[in-house]
Image (tube, rainbow, N blue to C red; front, top):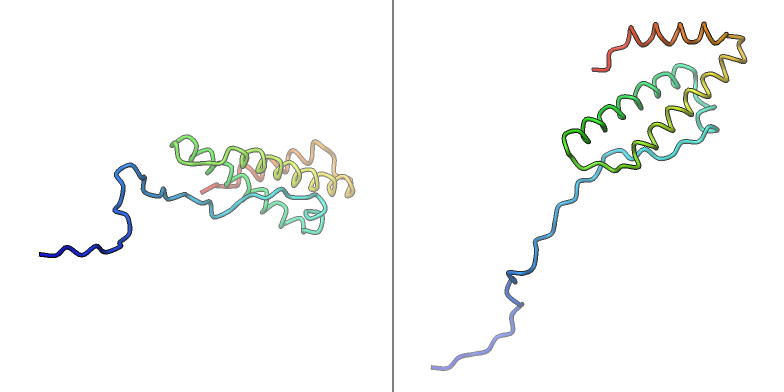
Length: 116
C-alpha cells in the first residue's frame, strides 16, 4: 500500500477565530458647515432640524439597548442641530422677529409635532 503525499491547505485551526461581522451605520452624520445651511430654505432647515433630532433620539435608544453606536455621532448630531438653529435665528433677526415671538412659534411647532 502506498501513501501519496498531497499538498493541501492547512486544516482549520481550533485557535483561529471566525471573522466577526461588523455592523455598519447606514448614515454617518458628517460635520455640517453653516455655509451649506445658509443655502437651504427656511422650510428645509426646519425639516432638517426635525430629522436630526429624530436621529439623535434613535441613537439614544440604540445606546440604551446596548447596541453598537459610535460615541462621536452624538456630538456631531448635537452640533448639527445647533448650527441649523443658529442659521434659522439669524434669518429671524434679519426679518425683525423678536426672541419672545420666536420662542412662541417654536413652542407651538413642538406641541403640534409628533416624532413617530
